[in-house]
Image 1 (spheres, rainbow, N blue to C red):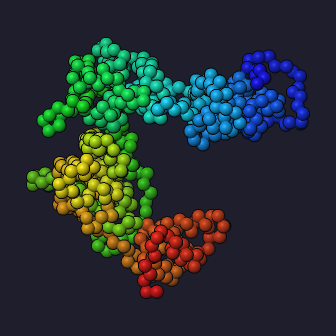
Image 2: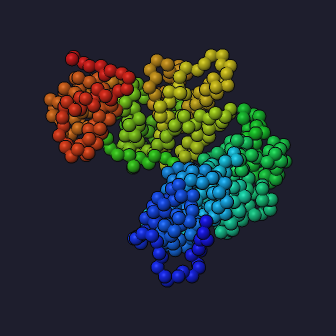
Image 3: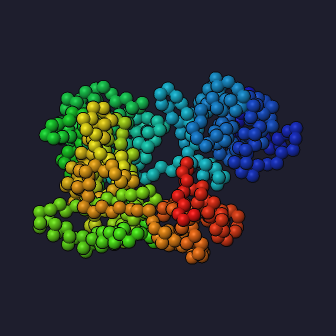
Length: 562
């Protein structure tokens, strides 16, 4: 390979001579495109370097990178749709992986300049191009990482969270997180958190562990931090044995200064789970406590963002939803709670929406929230469950702890929505012996206990109709069954979803196809997409009927009267 020049070297004013006429590239990406085309199967030989020279020089000067790094960046950009391995680059240019590995110093330089992110996990190395780099190149500009100025405790933990996301992808090491965390603490050295933490004079490792536990509490209201959580902080998820030993035996400096304590469960201390002490929260995190109301709203669905939708119900559903919406309004809900409390009854409202899929259960919750001014804390049951023994139970407890915290710090209790909760509302297994069955039963028992003491509003939606556990059935104060819409209701849904449809056509579709509201909405969306693509917005009843027939997979739509 010929010697490649650095951008700082003095360039000759003599025009570049080539065997063919080449137009000067107009942008970095255009020069990259030419470099990539010429590099394919070239082995990066002298013939390639000669032909690609104008494009290499253009990119090198624009980006202020050495020429070889400009070539490598072009090759990485071309494969920026996912994770990139060195072997893929080698295969593309037609050389051995070993030869490309000889250029690893230049690849490392691109990483140092933040043009690439490298992931090192399980003895495997891969790279990706950050979207910020792509955006800069689209603007025909070199990329320069703008470091966020950390000015307060909230920004500190936001930046720490960003680092932990990179850690999940193995793109940043424990030592880099530690160094950057201490740099950020220096930037907010006048904050209560930084001042108080400094007073304990902890070693770097203990200070880092406490910062990580603080992060889990601040971000997730996590009051049950297990070894599995702590392992995420360390490289290759390998927690130092000395650290685990100190925590198990209560010998860590964090115990000595009463910054952490064991989680107490049914009167017993769990030596594998920890939480910040009240002393630590009050002494080091008063700034966070003051902003907790705003912080707690961060991951909620805001009622003001929910679009208004007209939902069509059967008569019985309409009556139940209207009554429930009225009760959950601010004025009436407060009065109802006070009456229940005086009568010595539970103040919480647990409601169940159940029935066939696509009948509007989840959308009803959204509309109730919009009309009553309540935000929504949505729970995806599948994400709460974990393959780790004990983690799912901890996640469920943490979830209800967080909901209580939000209620305590909000003027208006949000709605706790367990969406598609089939997996936790089914009949509990008798005599469960397997680990999975025991976990399922344990999760259900925790939810049942929490429903007893709930002081807010919980709504669960499920497709279950016959397999609901009796213990759950007793605890739901309001139970609304969603039936498939009647022909009259389907006609109204067709008219709402397709505003230009004639009453006769809507009646025909409603009578011919026994569909749910969700299925009708899907058909309407497909019709709209087809209209945009074809430019023809005419409502063709035959084409819509054809879409209806294709809507369900492996099932024939029941036809009524035809």
